[in-house]
Amino acid sequence: MVHKGRHNALTDVEGIAVGQYTNQQAACGVSVVICEEGAVAGVDVRGGAPCTRETDLLLPGKLVEKVQAVVLTGGSVYGLAAADGVVRWLAEKGCGFPLDDTHVVPIVPAAALFDLGRGADFVPPIDAAWGRKACEAAASGPVASGSVGAGTGASAGGIKGGIGSASLVLESGQAVAALVAVNPRGSVVNPKTGELWERGLELNNEFGDQGQRRVKLPPLPEAAPGSNTTIAVVATDAVLTKYEAQKIAQMAHDGMARVIRPIHTMFDGDTVFCLGTGKKELHETEGFIAGQHPEALNGLGNAATDCLARAILQAIVSAESLAGIIAFRDLENL
Image 1: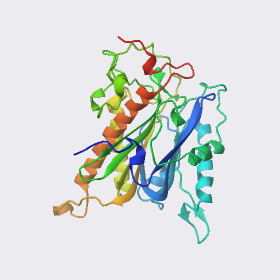
Image 2: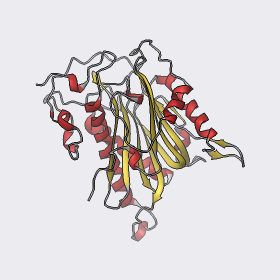
Image 3: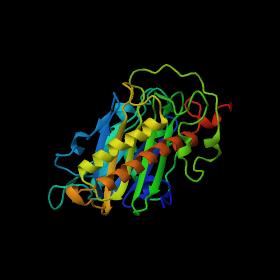
Image 4: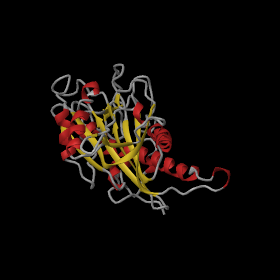
């Protein structure tokens, strides 16, 4: 039977820890996904205005297969500096691509969302120290959601965005999960009904009373070009190749499309990373495609899609009003 993981979070995937740093005054923050033993990684970028680091390295055919961390950050292009702190922290622990007996190079892809102008200063004082602080807070337990980490200053179609996470354990015993920073131009609420798009994806009342509400939406603010973006990490404890990780990342984007409308616009930089920590083998398919795993991959991709959609909704119902952006929980009922 398919069910939520223990924490209903990305940390339900063995080998992964999550740390976050939040600066409410700056309305900005950092979320870091750490896999010290390394994880095979893929990525798929679909938004028209991405802000990323090390994504080309993750494409099939490139030399390096494993990453030691992925950074999701606010601060737009300035926020990518947080990844430097994560690299230094991992290097001090000896985690990275081995160069020789004593030196490593940590591989840390990153993606940033646009939250400039929402805090005390137009450009938040984000730097490598923020990334280090997120690493120091990393744990394999519950993951905070809402107006924290990379979602601190996030906005979602005129209401408060944030960080969300969700997980599934499949009948095979493999875990699949998602962590997302929700900052889209599109809306997570159906304007005709005032309900969350696809709220029926909820498992075991994970969205609480908020998930059942019908709300009155505020007027949609004018969006400046490039001022949005939803960025995410999906992960599984399965053994994956880089191609398989890339395919799951591609499928997971459909989770965004289910609950954010419109999505992947020219003003969004929507990016999904996929990590495979390699703890459990995939089931092979017999016949002319023996030695491959299409059915197992289909199942993992579908689960990642559902997890990402649920994580987005979790971010919205958990968010608190901040930086002049009203949260879903504070909207009037219809």
